[in-house]
Length: 342
Image 1: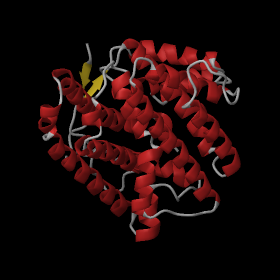
Image 2: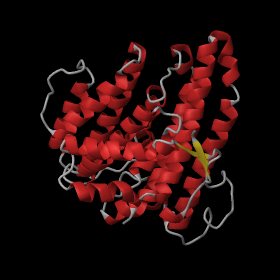
Image 3: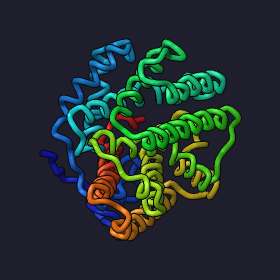
């Protein structure tokens, strides 16, 4: 049975954890309207992910990887994001977190951060995977490419052609925006707040993460509902909330690395003359505005019932609940993971 865990209260809460001038951004929590839930398969997923990373050669030091996996709470991330996932689904999610945060994303914080040619080659190899049938020869033999191919092919099993096409498009957008960040960083180009938010809504991988809500739990939203303006807007709000709060907790780490061009809080300071506290308050307003809009819009879900079967109506509501879980899980993970420690 999925567990419901204690979590921060909703937007607007004035507890010390939520609002305290002078706090580090990592200590500020904007809250979330929905409760945190946890899959009962967390520990099973942890062991599976660690073994999977070892099998694919994604770590040089197994014991160090075990310690980092626990410190960064990557199994918890999978269990909080997908509390209704099947056992195999939560395992795949934990493996994806291991692939994403350890070998892949860290390269864009390190070696690939300003090497646009190397970044383009890697992103191109990964994009090629999206068009290959399962088991096809890979464009490159590297562990990162092989691991991604395994995750992608397994996530597609049992899903429709429409799901695969839209999921592939989300991955293409994510990889292209990662490359764009490298190019901007190399040439010291800075986005404005609106441009940064649009890009960050993609580079936080919210698109692929929201696609996994369906395949990890064994259902699929009918295309009529998935393409509707309602779900399109709820997905956009989800991606933007995750982007804003991620930039909140990662600001000090990126500042310490000398990277101020891809973080909303730092852009507010540099371009708008905000103090640290003023920038945090602006991000709080942006987050709460989006939560409020999400809560208003989701009440319109029954409007789609006339064009859906009973199965489709159930899938629609499961998907919206999945977005709740993604936001609640991300909020908890960002504020408890060691990932963003300076």
